[in-house]
Image (spheres, rainbow, N blue to C red):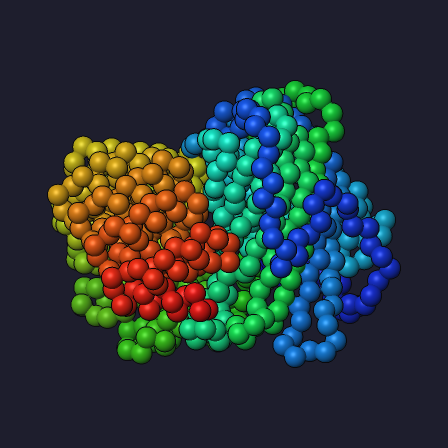
Amino acid sequence: MPLIVLLAVMALWSFEAQRGWKPSAPTQVISVSHPAPRSDEPLSTAVPKTVPPGKRGRQRVLTPGLEHRYSFDLDARSAEQLPGAETGRTWRHTGWSGVLELTYLGEEGGQHFFSARVEPSRVEVEEPLGEDELRAFRSRFERPVYVAQDPRGRVLSVHFDGELAARERRFLRLLLAATQFVAEDGRSWSTEETDTTGDYESEYRAGGSANTYVKTKRRYLRTALPLWAPTGPRGPGLVVPRLRGHLDFMLDEDGLLREVTGSDVVELGGGATGLPQTRAETRVALTRLETPRRTSLSMRVFREARSRLHAEPLSAMESTRMGAVEGDRRLVGDATLEVLLGVLETETREQELLQARERLAALFRLLPTKAVLAARRVRWVAAAQGSGVAQVLDALGSAGTPEAQRELARLLGESRLRVTTRALVATAAGKVARPSAELTQALARAVGATKEGELKRAVVLALGSVAKGLERSEPGRALGVLDGLMGRCEAKRLDVETCLRALARTGSARGLEYARAALAHRSAEVRVVATEALGAMAGADVDVLLDTVLLEDPEARVRVQAAVMISRRVAGPHLRAVAQVLRADPEPQVRAEVVRMLGTLLTVEHLAGELLRDVVARDDSEDVRRLASSLLAE
């Protein structure tokens, strides 16, 4: 669960901030089976009795219209202590309780959709809300939200009504993140999940009773908001919070959630990082209330509501719409379109160009019709072979307004424009966060009509980005885009390397077999890109393929790429292959990349330390030994 209950949850207290924090009367904090673990306590290693695992994940029995009701309690507290402060920690508390109604609707684009409706009975933001405040809070949840999961149970996105405030959205994301169960095959498995802080590695083991499991949250792989430490063993750099957590799950005979209890602790900073030391503790309990009941709900209700919904990942850190508008106004200031276009056409300093491009994108969001004038300027400057075209197009793509997308679609279809300019248009189209049907269709037409290699490559890569952009809000349309692209790739109508690079952008398992076949390509460069594409995909099948590349590919640079991709994934499935590489791979650069990966696991994986000590004692390369020794010293 998130630390950024200091970054994500802190905003939950902002509306009370004017009162200042003070030690309040004892607040009710739920009692759960696992107290929040201390950061210096060893994790439990109890071995459960052997009980056959039941249905879960892909084997779940999901019935459209079937509603389950749950009672829930979720409490979080966080504290920040400045270096050298003598006053100690000041804790802030937030939490809520109530009833969650969860109804399965159906499937679209390989995702399972649920309707979620909440009836809050308790809300605390440092102090409990009064009756009138609670009534107003409860009224904001009269409309359902919609939750999308992958077949394993990982929450991919939450579709909120556009009028639901940021505070209420965060409450829901916290609850959904705390109670998700992501299943693979076997009695134990490791997997990647997302919470309100970022993506993390978790480990599951079957419990001592039928349909029970214990989940251990091990480490963050990446955070939604990059965290920069001004100091550290190697100097300034990005850091991730320290994560520890245990949750007990009970499923029913159909593989659906029956009960969850547990807690986690997330810490950041302190030590040599130069950051304030922060700690966040979260406790959750959720229990099914009664026998499921059938309703008339289906995917139809979601599709009818989709136009007014906004899809967010669990780790969304966005501001409110009003806050975004005000931010754009401050960014633009008194600049006009002509002034910003002039800067982009004459400026050569990278930082100044970046700032002008961001201000222009903000101007397009505030004054959408300015996109038409900008597109005219692009046509004129491109014909005169002037500069600044790429910057203006990038601003249109970053703005992503309907008007900006319409102009990009028109520019892409104008054959009188130079091929280089149209390739820049395609690149800008790939940066649109929520691609329109018009822009998507323009790219699809271009990939079939274009013969110029430069433009075709740019269009294919843009389609990969578009499919990824659509995946959260319209997974059915995303799958359609990807099916069309993969059909051309599989028919060998497109360059294999370009297809693989597009797949790397999508991260979709739709291209798994294509990437698997590319691992046998005679070109090492193609195999490198195929490995990168596989690394963007989830699943145990991909883990096996990456291990195979790491151990068996004849080219060192392909094996290095496999090690790089493995380092960004959950570690458990790869440790056996990693140990073999350290003993048997003849190339120092491959072993060095594996050593770097192990350095990130020292705090969560005992075997990582043993392997690094073995490298220090036995490796043939002095550079590799020195690298392993330095990581152990840190």
